[in-house]
Length: 214
Image (cartoon, rainbow, N blue to C red; front, side, top):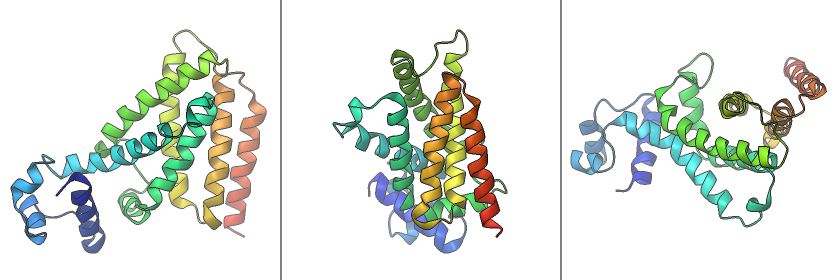
């Protein structure tokens, strides 16, 4: 078995049983495999949890970088393209991510250790986005502050993830709109700091909340 096969079976087990396997032994016995088949790839279930998130991220990034047009995008366009493709990649795991979110009252918990590898990989990616944005004049090069922008993009990523999980609009149109507006606001705040974009986003969120109760 390879990493992807183990992940698929691991996800399937949790969705069918509503919990993690009791042990690696129990899990692999169900698959008619040995412990060694598991430990050849992962040290424990926690490592497999981390692999899920970072694997979706790396798959998204690799697909983007394989697109010749992507390299010509500006920083904000690259980030938007990432979010659009990332949520599409997550779609095949939506039931599983919803299952994970149900364990936390506030959705996917930013302190979840399973996000550790994903977070570090994303911060590296975000650093390249910020550097490109500074070079293109989209992001202001502020002393002592610019280095923190990547952390703001990480917070933005988790916001969009939980927004997507709660989205019930047709074809997830609200998520697409949220990506566009969030990226736009982010770059405005990192650049010219135009608060009319913040107001526009606030109106969008208010209208969405109003519609959900109508």
